[in-house]
Image (cartoon, rainbow, N blue to C red; front, side, top):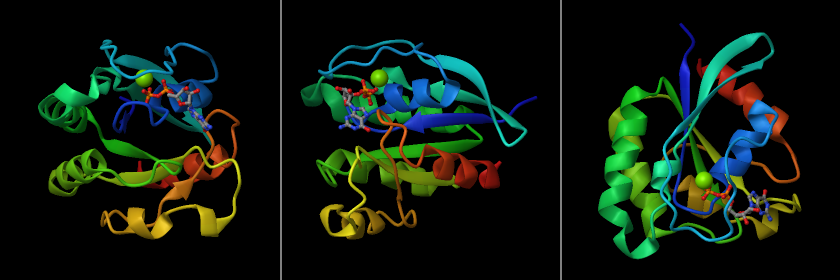
Length: 163
Ligand code: GDP
Ligand code: MG
């Protein structure tokens, strides 16, 4: 069967936008405000002849104040069922405590992780907090703009290497 790739990250980083971008249609609901809990979404996708099932972990979208425990549980579930993980962070907001929490879980999980920094519309390295993200211990982030479809091909190239 196809490997499962979960998109994991805190609310509002653009998980659903990236999911839609990769599967090529608007299935996941994109929300300007975090706080809505939804079931996970599964959709088959393919890149360079490699097939996989992509998961949008909508269940991670809890209100920020109740977030830590819920995020931990939802991330745990997503990580357990996944063969590889896209860990999405927000290059505009930079590194947060929740990112660090999720990263800790991912390091323990011992599964392949691709760190991706979203909302990069300007590829000016001095404006992207790459060094902060690098400190997560998950390698160099791949910069993308999910909403504009920038560099998502590179993301997929890196992803299929992990499958
Ligand atoms: P999720 O909560 O992680 O699923 O995030 P969503 O996909 O719902 O997106 C949250 C917000 O970020 C929405 O307002 C999106 O339009 C916006 N967004 C998503 N991707 C990008 C991007 O690449 N660039 C910018 N500037 N905004 C984005
Ligand atoms: Mg979402």
